[in-house]
Image (cartoon, rainbow, N blue to C red; front, side, top):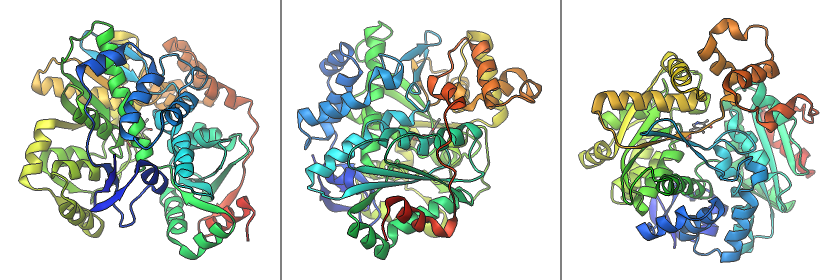
Length: 500
Ligand SMILES: *Cc1c(COP(=O)(O)O)cnc(C)c1O
């Protein structure tokens, strides 16, 4: 199987090359040239095996240049009970006879990004070997919180890699900062940047496009790569858990063979929901994709009108990992909906970067309307949903997952559709403890409490155990107190790598 670029379909590379490179040279994203089929017999097989076998089966359909041993090694290193604190890796929680939460947050950093970032380092180092790359790979990450920690945990102590994370000095939550500055591992570096997330992101982009600096790195034996969600190696592991959820529903007698389900995904960069669509293209029986946004509802408007317009105020919400106005992975979806029309996709992406806006054609509008339903929830609707779900079912969700549930409730009210539905649960409620506790008990309940008192309060109320990785932050030593100026980020990299 080969991979094409969404902006130039003549580009044709192996999966190892696509994963190593991250982004195509002309700025397009790598997409598989075809989608392997999954039959109902395959799904039956999946319902009889555990998560690592499910992962090996699905990922293997795409990474055809990897050997069976290479795949086996990648999946068994990534999806262990030790790292995910559960045998099933991505368990389903049955809320009602119609609604199930797919819990994707049992990994080491308590958010769904672990599902991909635990395996990406292994896919990447294997890809480096397969393409005869002799350099050590340096992963640079600018983070607004979740991705940085998940990437650090994934890459720590992985041979042949170094990872450097830049976060905005005053732009991440206390828990997120603690998670990063206490990071262990022999190959990790963490820097606070005096600036906001955009400054950190621009600094990283500058390093990536600075050819002189890249030569210096090469001279030191290093090549650069990225761990963000445009990398095919982050997308392909996410397809697995939609099949896994379906296989569990079938095994538990919740659905009949071939029965269609709805999928609800709290969405930011459009990676997670795209993975569910790719599962559908392979043969997963899906009735409707429900795309849930917070007040940054650019995708809701797009799905309803066909106009993508990022020229709007940016809202800081209680679901910060979805505070995003440019959903990069939408480009892959458009490539598919246009019948792989690289010219038209290039045009729209050019319009987006020049004017912040584009409008798709009628054919794409029609397809969008038949496949997807878009909706959004503001912070107060999100908080109401957290409280309501707890009061009715005794189940506590985080803010991002609650956006998904709130939008699903709106979908039901509008359509009356009773199809069984899987809602992607993207973070542990403990990771956003303050917002969750305020939703449950009001503002006064959190006054004067530090992060650890909040964790205890949430544990008591929900009956859930505090994830070990968050509880241990209290006693972990701070390793990184480096702060760098936003125009000094390449110097920070050089000093970390010990090169001129
Ligand atoms: C990253 C993230 C999202 C958004 O996922 P996308 O793939 O970017 O759409 C939703 N919830 C949480 C908790 C996240 O960390």
